Image (cartoon, rainbow, N blue to C red):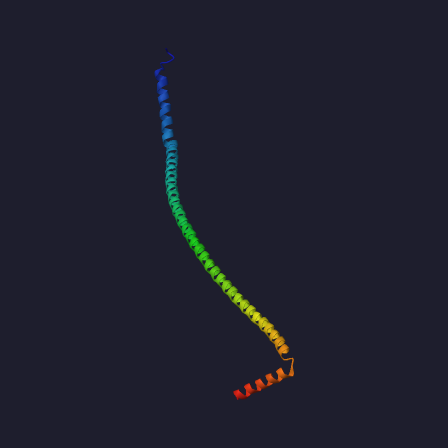
Length: 165
């Protein structure tokens, strides 16, 4: 078991070398290692702080985006409502304009029909009077074939003229 039990001199020199190594490391290496660890810790703390700030900014951005989306949806609803009102108004105006135009057309048609009726009546009267004159002319010619009938007609007309004056 000698292998596992060290001699006292070996233990002494190991302790001396360990103390020297510990002193050298404590004097020169540990401050740099601790400084590096502190810098690393500070960097990690800054990273955590940066991540927290980024998370807050992201949350704020999400809230702001939701606010903008809600505002945009409200504006969209307002625009759609206004468009529906305008559509209804345009339809009503078009209906009114169409009714006015239809009334104008109907009035014009009535006037045209009345005018055509009057023209037809006038033409009918002219034709009837023309036929009546033609018939009267033929009858008077037939009755006035003799000189005696003509003389009686002339006397009768002269007496009427004298009575009027």
